[in-house]
Length: 134
Image 1: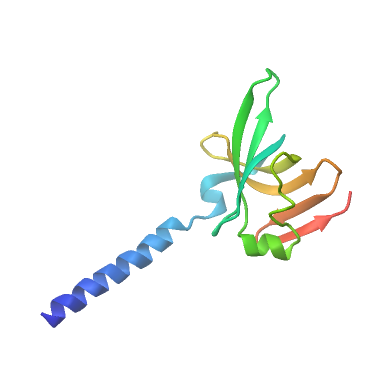
Image 2: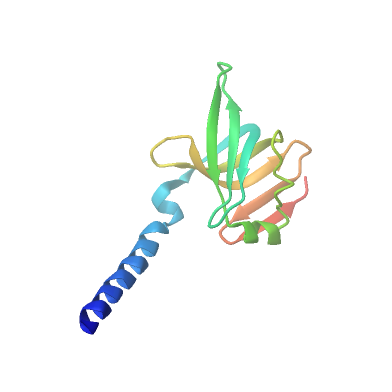
């Protein structure tokens, strides 16, 4: 009976590790890093959660229709160390974003640089976030 219990625990442990490995993905697997996009919009929501912060933008098209975009970025701790805070990413803030669109062409992207209406910007890239002056 003890061997069966041990075997079950081992299998559950292996599944847990495999699930974690499967859940974490590379940037290149989801986004086309060879084609950058620039979008301008208004921040409508921010999810300041691990493992990635999500910024949601309302982007007005040439036809006047508003498209909803979801932009993934680095973890909250990395952003904070680079000077990007929750308060900085306020709802209603007008921003321009340079990033990479999802391979499937949806309104999903990875945020690389965010520029605010007053011209200051933050470069957010692979484990780093830093402020650049206009």
